[in-house]
Length: 331
Image (cartoon, rainbow, N blue to C red; front, side, top):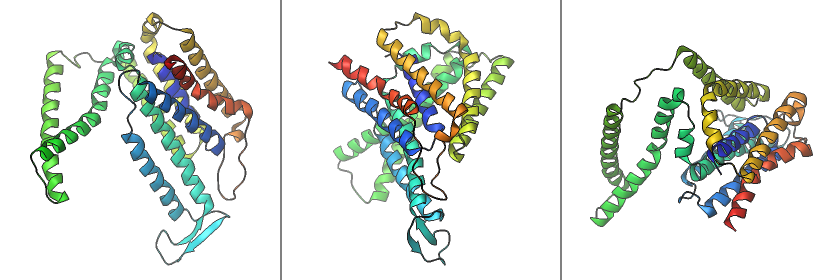
């Protein structure tokens, strides 16, 4: 599938987990995105599987989030056990409510990491960069270079360790860590200087964006910050406001990309996937505007069964459509 379809799918998945803490809907979103991740991993469309390291880090962070919330939020009607009240911060009742809320936060984090891993394995970066209008060329090039820093650091660490093993270098962990960090830092500086010289020769950053483009960029950044704030606080309306304002600003900035989108080859499967993604986004935004109680859920102060509507559930389940298409193409 082409880059616009994958980017739209990722945006709808992010919207789905940003506007709700309902465990039923979050479970559907995680299951749907995980199925796409597995389908991309099997097919390897661009010659590389989706990266697993961010998911491993995400699992550790998710577990830490559950433990931290359980030890610090002493609220709820389902008490599991009690720690001595004299203990600072962690002292008091450990409730099932706090554990479940930590699990909901961890589910949101894991879903976003799965979406990022899918884009890493399936998105054609060159095609996506060609769709960027001239106003964003400098920012997108900088972002693309920044995203390569972590994989290059991982590869450099692996190469340095292999070189040390070939030379028979051993010792305590502290000594080995120091012997790894110095060559990795040296390689990173060499790469940074080489990239800087190349960009300087090509006149990178010589053209400044117009004042109108700068205002739209600031509006997009402000909308994204509002979206993150809404996700952290669990305020669906605030997340919706931030997402809509960011999308409006990005739409005005990316009007120049429409010509590139029309030049792409669109198959029926890609058009159907894009239509389902946009339909799911419309259902989610409509539910948030007309029936926000279906998306709002909290484990405090009492546990209760979360609401569920089949139409909203189908919107989350439609996120699995790319998995079906990838498996069909594989056959």
